[in-house]
Length: 167
Image 1 (cartoon, one colour):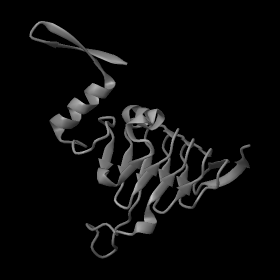
Image 2 (cartoon, one colour; image 1 turned 135 degrees about the vertical axis):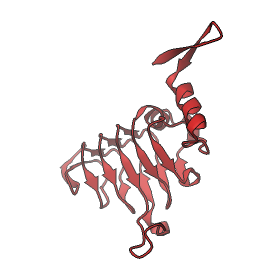
Image 3 (cartoon, rainbow, N blue to C red; image 1 turned 135 degrees about the horizontal axis):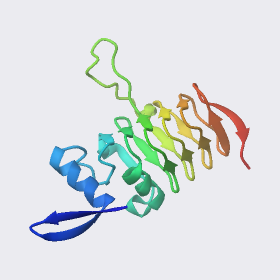
């Protein structure tokens, strides 16, 4: 997808990645991140986001860039393996809040989220703190993942449960 920008009678062809970066810088949204995410998405504590093979991980970079309205809370760590794809409106929530002081996140290194290699996450999925999703798994749209999902599994529902082994 590309757009045309007109500045002083000159036309410039811009792709979505450039549009996202410009918007993020203009509104100071996600501007501290080294990853280019969609301008409608929010990335909190990007320093704790780890992507296997970094910017060479094409599928994760494409999902970050194209998936709209995602919320990535990396407070306790968020790890993406190789070949991970996720749809729009996915929430990765790696921290909870204190019940007394609700403005402070609870920092717990065991609450990191790990998405292993070749995982496919449907739209409107919520992934809660401390979850590990095993390699080659599929999470159905609208699921709430609050427990670990084994590898090679199709999981759906609220809460997400394994309904099929994928071989």
